[in-house]
Image (cartoon, rainbow, N blue to C red; front, side):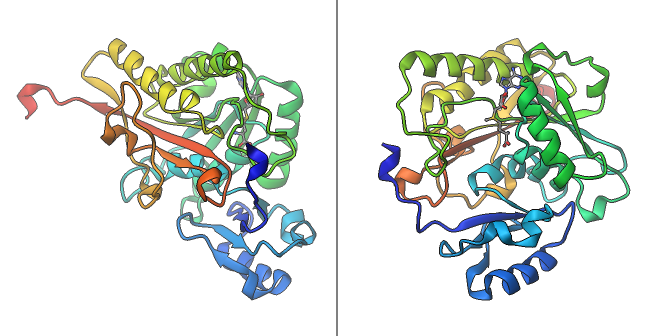
Length: 322
Ligand code: SAM
C-alpha cells in the first residue's frame, strides 16, 4: 500500500521557471539560500534542481515566492518535456510563426506553465508561442489562473473554462494548434507523497470508468487533423489507465485514418536515457512499450508513480516511394 513507501530520503525537486529567470541565476540563489552542498542538477531533465531531503525551508526561498522557481515533482515534469523535446535535434515547430499548444486537462497548471516555458525559450523570444489551457472545472480553472499570473507572464497561457470532450477541431482558438498535452483525471495510484491521497484502493468500477474517460480523451486528441504530436500521461501505476489505454487508442485511431497516415508511439528525445519503460500489454509490441516511460516509487524511483506516452502522426510510405 502507499503508506509503505518512505519518501523522506527523496530529493526535493525544484523546476527553474525559465519564463522568469535563468538556470544560472536560480542555481546561484539556491546555493546561497539553501547551501551549495544541498543543490544539484537533475541528470536527465534540464532546468530541474534536486535539493537535499534535509532542506526544509524551501517555501521561504524568495525565488519560490516570486515564481522564478516552482516546487514540482520530477514525475510531473516529464510530460511537457516529452512533448516539447520532440524527437530530433532541432525543435519541430516553426519558430518564425506563433504556434499553439493545447493543455486539455490543465488545472492547477503545473504542466501548462512548464510547457509554456519550454516553448518560449530565450532563443525564441521574437515569437510567443501560446498554450491554451482547458479545464472543465470552474473552481480549478481559477486556481490555474492564479498560478499562471504568477508563473507565466506575457500572455503565453490562455486559460479557458471548457470541457475538452466538447471541443471541436475547427474552433478558431485551435487554428494554429500543433500539439496536445493530455494529463486527464486518473486514480492517482502513483502518488505517495501527497496528503491528497490517503492510499485508498480503487474499485474495479472506478478504474474502468476512469480508463473509459482517458481513452475518449486520448482518441479526441488524436482526432484533431492539424495536430501532429500528442503526449498522454497519468500519475497512475495501473496498466489499465496507461498501456491499455494507449494500445486501444492506437488500434482504434489507426483503423479510421486514411491518406497514408498513421499515429505512432515514439521515444521522447529528452527521455532517451530513461530506464523504466512501459509494459507489454495486449496489442503493444516490445518496441512500442519501449517508447513509453514510467516511474515507480514502489520499486525505488525517488518520485511519484507516473506514466508518459508520446504520439507522432507519421506518413506511411507508399510502395512506390520505397
Ligand atoms: N495537468 C495538471 C497539472 O499538472 O497541474 C493536472 C491535471 S489533473 C490530473 C486532471 C484535470 O482534468 C482536473 O483538473 C479536471 O478538472 C480536469 N478534467 C477532467 N475532465 C475534463 C474534461 N472533460 N475537460 C477538461 N478538463 C477535464
